[in-house]
Length: 265
Image (cartoon, rainbow, N blue to C red; front, side, top):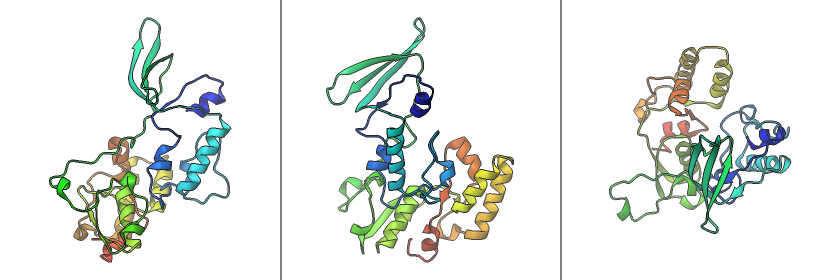
C-alpha cells in the first residue's frame, strides 16, 4: 500500500506496533520457513523478485526482498505506535486516529481523509487455556518462539495444532530426531505445492466448486485415505474454505510421509 501511494505521490503515514518492518518474518518465524506459494503469487507491486530467487522463496530471501522494497520506495513507518482508536469525523470528513507511543507513553493524534487497516491475519499470538498446563513440568513454546528442532533431539514433543505452521514444525522436529506427536482437532485439506499452483491458475477461469473437486480428487490419489492416521477431509472444498472462512489448506512439504511412516504420531 505504501509503495503504491508513493508511486502516485500521495502523502501518507504508517503506524507500526513493532520496532521494525516485517516483524513476523524477522522475529517470529521458524528457520526453515519458505513461502508456500509460487513466487509469482507473492510478489509486491512495482518490484519483482530477483531472477536468482527460487520458485519457493526462503524466509531470509523474503526478508531481504522486503528490506530492499522499503529502501526503494522510501517507506518510513512510525515505529512502536499502537492504535487505540480510529473515528470518522463527519463534519471535517477526516479520520481521527489516536496511537500510543510505546517509547514515551504519550497518546498521539493523527488525521487523514482515508484510513487503511493492514494489521494482518496473524498479528497476535494466541495460546489457549489448557487444563493442567500450568503444572506441566516441560517447556511450553508458542510457534512464534520456535526456531528449529536442534534442541529437541531425542525428546518427546507434542505439537498442538495441524495448520501449516504445526505441520511444518512437526516435520522439522522429526528431522532433528525428536519423538514427535501432532494433535489434529479439525478436518483439514492436504495439498502439494503443485496442486495449489494448479488450483490458483484454474480458479481464474473455472468455478471454484469444480476446482475444489479436482483438488480433492488429486489429494486422494497422492495421499490416499488419511483417516486411519487421525486426519479427515472437510466436506467443503479447499478453495471455498479459504474464500469463505479464511482457512488455508495444508501445503505438504513432507509431513504426510513421516505421518505414514509413524515418525510423527
